[in-house]
Image 1 (spheres, helix red, strand yellow):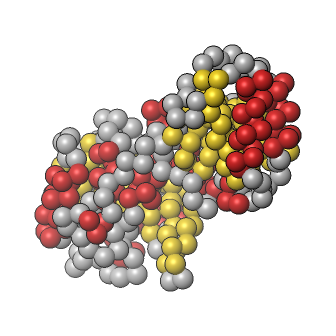
Image 2 (image 1 turned 180 degrees about the horizontal axis):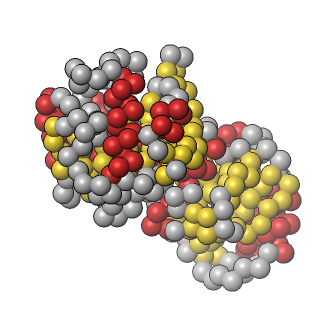
Length: 322
C-alpha cells in the first residue's frame, strides 16, 4: 500500500487527480490518502499530491503509538535514515520534532545510522486527527508548473492558475505524446501544462489576438512541438477521433467573442465537437453544464465544485463517452 500526502484543502479533488497515477485511491484522513499501486512517472506530475510513500503501518495519532508500530514493523532496508514528521493541517496537535526524535531512536535501536542531510531512506510520519501513518518516501511531486499568468509574455485577466491547469490535464489522463486539444485556448495556460506533461498541445481560439499571444507563451514555455490557430470551437478543422484528450475553460459570465454564438450555444457546440474528435474531456466553467454534457453525448463521470472567491466557483466536469 502507498500513502499519499495531499496538497490544498479539497481532498476529493486531490484524490480524483491522484487516480491518474494510482489505483484504488481512497481518503484516509484530512490531507491523507492511500493507494494500492502508483506509477512514479505519472505521480511526479501531480499538482495536488505532495508526496508518495510506501506504507509501513498506521496507529493512533500520537508519537508513542507510532513508535510501537515501527518497533514491530518488518524493515527490509539498509543504509542511513532520516525521519520527517508532519502535523497535517495542524489537526493532530503533536510536537513534530519530538515525534522525529522518538521514531529516530527506534530506528537507531534497530541498527540504522541517522543522516539528516543525505539519508539513503526517509521515514515519513504523517499525523492527521487521531491517525498516524508511517511510510518510506518514494517520491515528491515536481512542482514544475509554468509561470504564473502575469509573468508570461502575453497576459489577460481571468487566466487559470498553473496548478489547477496541471490538475485538469491529469484528470483528463494526459500522458506523453498525447494530442491535447484546447478549442478555446485563450492565453494558452492549459496548453503549457499539456506540453510540460509531455503531450502535444493543439489550440484554437476565435480571436486573432489570443492566437498570437498563445503562440508567444508556448514558445517561451515549451521546447517541444505545438499547433495553434484561429478557429471556431463549434466547427473544428479536425478529423473524427483525432485527439487523445480535450480540455477547455469555458467563458465566464459573458458572451463569446464569436459574434454568431451565445455562451450556451458555444459551450454546447464545443462539447459536441469535443465528443466527435475525442473520447476524453475535462471542461471547466463558472456553472454546472450537466445537461449540455449529456446532450453532447458525454457521461459526467464526476464534477468538482471549487470555490475560488465569493463571486466565483469553478465547476470541473470530468467526462467520458456515453
